[in-house]
Image 1 (tube, helix red, strand yellow):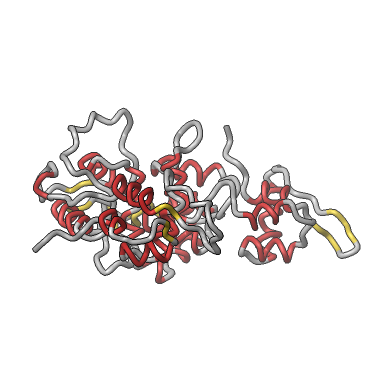
Image 2 (cartoon, helix red, strand yellow; image 1 turned 60 degrees about the horizontal axis):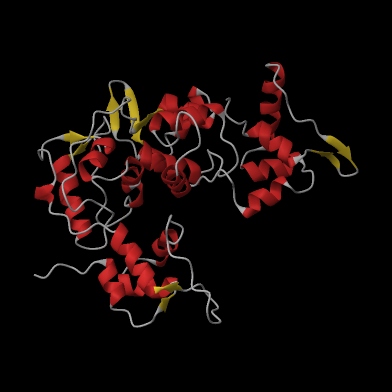
Length: 334
């Protein structure tokens, strides 16, 4: 049986010189949502500006070249190092395949609802290397993730302990700012409970790359603006943010896939620059109850922390949205 054509080969066969998102989807077999996500990746070709197009169109040859550089070539699982029985973390998978750790960390969540999902982790957050190799081979034969065509050089010993791959309830408390009992209730939600990979000792754990996107989707983490000190610390421990300095382009891309963009959407920036807001409007914007707003302000006052002060207007008390956002999502301490 002839091997399946690569994405670049499929694009080479297209007849038009410029392609829309729908054209790329039709030629490659990727979904339109996947193609739209790819157009936001670093290095994706700029849209063609010639002609009068109602939708963005991209130079076919440039798109094919990008696909050729970024799609995994047909992986021969036998060429990858290690024994099939090895238990490996996402970091080790990255080392063995030659991919960046941040890229590999996306695979469990990206393919969670696929008909061929990424192999499941055990309670320690490790994966069966034989299952991973077979999965990579199957994906590369279709339209799979990026990978290495040649066995990578032996990885140098890590300069620091490998990042974690799992979340515990204590880490969820730090991420969400909720107390122990509230988190116990949270993790009983069916969509969260089903993601658990079991227990390590008495601690229940969840694959970080799978649970984090859901926490953002459900509104337990801010979609934009500065992160608090504790969420930042957890993301550093997980390897999604650097301990010092600014995140890399790859880390930013992973966090955007999870549902977070520090710079924020146009809507968020407009909100911050908008008129003073009532407690009801603030509660709706942050997805909480009015009592949650009041209680958080009261706790901060009791702790001697600065709190936003409303201004008296003809329409009642109103808060400056930018000042309130700084209070609600305090930036990490330097």
